[in-house]
Amino acid sequence: MRLHLLDGTYELFRAHFAPNRDAVPGADGLDIKATLGIMMSTLSLLREGVTHIGASFDTVTESFRNEMFPAYKSSAGMEPSLLRQFPFAEDALEALGVVVWRNIEFEADDAIATAAIRWVEDVDQVVIATPDKDLCQLVIGDRIVTYNRREQKILDEDAVVEKFGVRPESIPDYLALVGDTADGVPGLPGWGAKSAATVLYRYPRLELIPADAGDWEVAVRSADKLAATLRDQQEEVFLYRELTTLRLDVPITETLDDLEWKGVPQDTFEAFCRRLGVDPDEIRVHRWREV
Image (cartoon, rainbow, N blue to C red; front, top):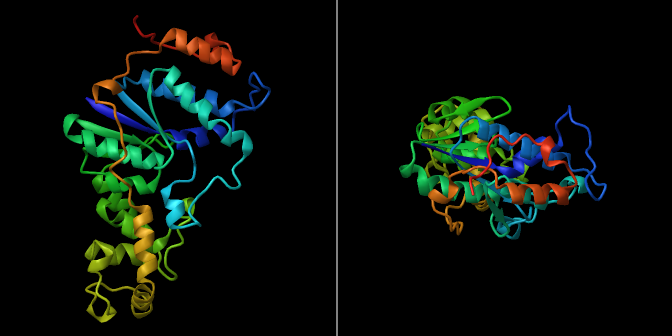
């Protein structure tokens, strides 16, 4: 049995910016393209034989990390037509019979991380449907993998090492050094993907990196300068690592059995479609939940 964990926030963005889809006016005349897109995309995934699934959303884009670092990602600059669809998208997946985690204090990735680690021993494989690199820190062998649905690419532990040059457990340290523009984490000046990967593959955690570049057992260009930056910005880099480390203590109340998909609840689905202003028959449901 596989457990699929859907990065709902990414899926909503992907549907909104899909190049071959025109705007779709809903009941209030505003664009609901992204909401319809995520419904269609999730049904497509379920047609592939998914049995257990949960979806996680950034209900509120800001989280506890914004209190730690004000420059962390926020909803500032997000298109209003996209921002307003978050609650619709959450309701849409629930109308399909999918368990949805709405995150306010935490982020969507934290709930996914909590679920993945909680149930990895109870399933054959956990598949995290996302291309986001920060979730690669959760990968364990081929027991927990990430799945880029758009590119049809799966990253197991070997693939993470091949792509980033570091093991999954070093991904937060890697992002702390090189930065993560998607989340507003700046990284350290001079540290790039190659230098960070070379050093962290030998010294997997920041605190294991020798302070003096002369003690490094790997060859890195401008090592003395990089080591000096690391020494001078210790407080910043450890903060960045804390920002990029996913939490495993999100209060998820569901059991694994609750995540079994039993089909689309027809009455709930049709009521949601009416509220959205779309014809339920236009959304191809392949399996209704038995009453």
